[in-house]
Structures are given as structure tokens and as C-alpha cells.
Amino acid sequence: MAVTVRIPTTMRPLTGGDKQVAVESGTLSDVIASLESAHPGMEDRLLEPEGGLRKFVNVFVDDDDVRYLDGLDTKVDDGITVSIIPAVAGG
Image (cartoon, rainbow, N blue to C red; front, side):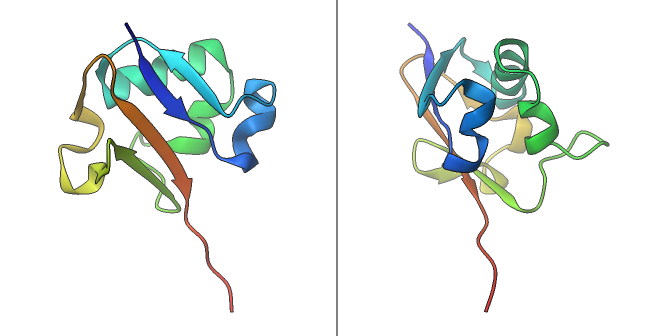
């Protein structure tokens, strides 16, 4: 079994238009590394150069914001859904 990652519209060109992709389970960091391996450029969109999550990208494991869990060390088990949601700003 694998982890399902929901891809936002703005990042779908990197996945060939796929709305969801399946990757191996592990920590969120492992999930992002698997995304990068299968779809180059994803890591740059999700992580700061220092390695932390970008401020304008929200990541949820099942319905929980990883910033209130263990961040990149959050455990993502088989069958779990990870949702990437870009922050929306404007006036």
C-alpha cells in the first residue's frame, strides 16, 4: 500500500496533470523525497533552501496541519492522504 498525495492545480504541471500521486510511506520528509524522485521540481516548491517547509504552502496529513504535528518528521502511514494546499493571499 502507499500514501496518496493530493496535488494542487498550480503544481500539476510537475506531475503531468495528475491530481493525485501515490508514493511510499514514511515520514513527511520521506514522502517529499519520493515526490521529488518521481516528479522533479516538487521539493523546490515545498521546501525552503534550508530544508524547512515553505511558509506559503500548507501540508496536511489526513486533516491535520503538519505544523501542529511533527513537521517534516510527521509519520505518514500506508493508506494516509497528504494534501498540499498553497496559501492564498490578496485583497
